[in-house]
Length: 139
Image 1 (cartoon, one colour):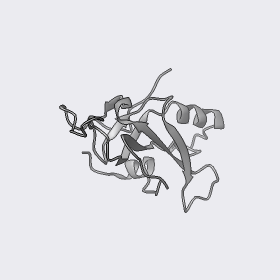
Image 2 (cartoon, one colour):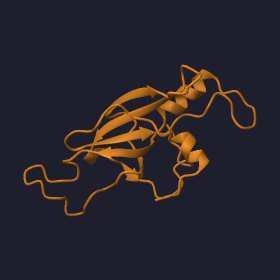
Image 3 (cartoon, helix red, strand yellow):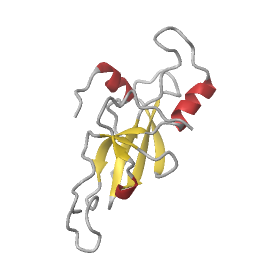
Image 4 (cartoon, one colour):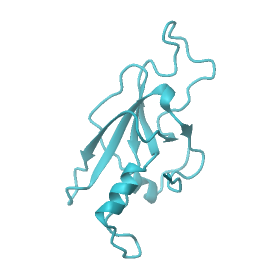
């Protein structure tokens, strides 16, 4: 797993999601959209931020339900093993799962929130093996 640097800490801040996955579900923290202004001083309009948020397909595994990656009838682990572990970065489907937002405790802006997603274990698209900050989704 990749070492946590400042950019990753900003994209995936440490915050309590307020939920725990049940059954065969995976709890994922989605990458936080960029702030209102880029490092070069360009102000991002609301439409750009919303587009980035909707097209976000990168998440960090926060927790895994007790039945994930197990045969439902015998509770034996899947022959190929777990597809991911806590701390892994994933490509997540755009239009699936249960999503909610949690406001950052020290947020000065009402829009400064972190989005979480719970999805079924078999809905994971891929495990990211490179830098999760460089993965982009295209429509």
